[in-house]
Picture 1 (cartoon, rainbow, N blue to C red):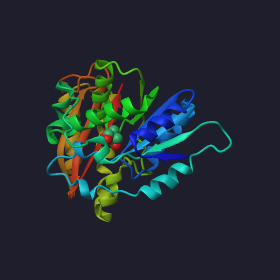
Picture 2 (picture 1 turned 180 degrees about the horizontal axis):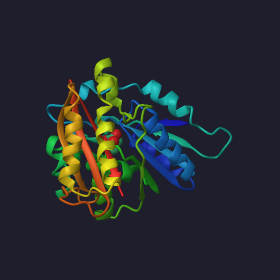
Picture 3 (picture 1 turned 45 degrees about the vertical axis):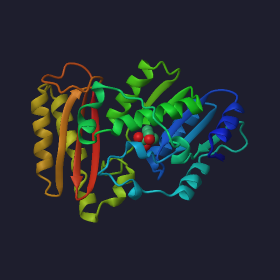
Length: 283
Ligand code: PAF
């Protein structure tokens, strides 16, 4: 495994790679979900680049960037455990700094329009502009053949998919299933902030999504009914404070009156100060 930080060293490392390259963009504090993306990228490419960068521009004024969990040493040892010794395949970890990414005078932004207005975008103004800008920079710097993202951040995946198509990035996006704890809670770096009681209560996201999915599988196609049933389940958990619940078109993310094609059930819920999101895709 090779760790590089500057654009210059990344470029040299990238130029030395012969064959296909998979990129796994992360903000570090890796968990099994990230590792499953790396494992998939390794299985599908000759080489893998993992970027670790807590991107300041995707944090809102009310979101504490300094409190975002970081543990580079642990991240590097987890990644090293995924290496395949004795093969020509390379694992490169890129750890740029904020000063390298956004040097003084920086003023170029990538913005996807309508898709970023609702759901997470409505709750976190400016968030997706930061995400698309940094991901475009990661793509340009690493020139991957494939890039791996988790389905857990469903709107992020939809927005980046749009950006890749609109800006003709010559790469394939691979969206990997959400990795879950045994009780269904989606893995997230934020779960560590939950108290014991909140951690137990947090399974209500998975339970609510399952209620709506079961109704859908039984033939229910009324979007409002699916949203209502998810809200009712969330309301039954005293520690859960719902921020939004959605049943939307998978690609446009517009709320649906009737589910006819591929759809996304999603929600954001607070447990104390910790905000969790989760979603299911209905096919
Ligand atoms: O999903 C994340 O961890 C981040 O939003 C990403 C894609 C690495 C961009 O900073």
